[in-house]
Image (cartoon, rainbow, N blue to C red):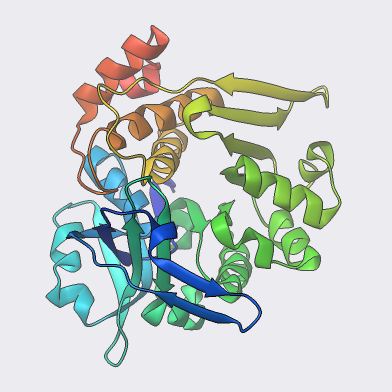
Length: 332
């Protein structure tokens, strides 16, 4: 049976982005001795965006429409009333299977930017905290059809359980610990890495994994087969072990966007591009390059799920950036 489906695990959240026309330092009073804090911030604008790691990855996979995507998670009633369900299910290739928690809100991230681009961030997990109660073995009836699952940022408990369940289902896993990387214990990381095909994260997150496990990259690759390190505007790096056993590193430059507006969600688009490359049976390097291409479209708009593109525009930018188009992408 052909494995041509993807499972996307992680957060589904609303992002509330606000602007403050002053500097935070002028609006905060802190007395460290008395442990007293006072701050009053009046935002002059507020925008609601659809977000979350899983939602962002799935949105980009929906735009490409090259594979069937199972999007799983736990949400509140506001997921429906505030339009997220309609927004993500407009893509025919996305199979949304969420548990709705009637007494909880969907996860939310409140971000206030001051005039110097400093950020004040408050995150409320809400229904996301219930992800740990999802059993993939009950949700997935055809595990042999799934080429990969990406286990991306959410609670440590949920990520540990999903790793075990995916291993039981024999579905290859990409481990994407993200900002919760520091919360994993050494034993947890070693166990999950042993169940993973690929480890992906930014430079800080990969270094955290190395430090916590007391392993270098050579030894990490005895557990997972591949490491992908994203570096923002500096591109990304593919690290793998050659057949000879030698450690190989390939630097992948970014694709230049037409304009730089907002980098939020670019890393999630990279993951969607990489997953698509794997589904199309591309070489790892080409899959990473496809990730860079998708990330470049995201930074051209404000928000992680506001960009639009299609296969034709992806091919065009791929050729412009790398001066060729992989045959697997060409035939789509």
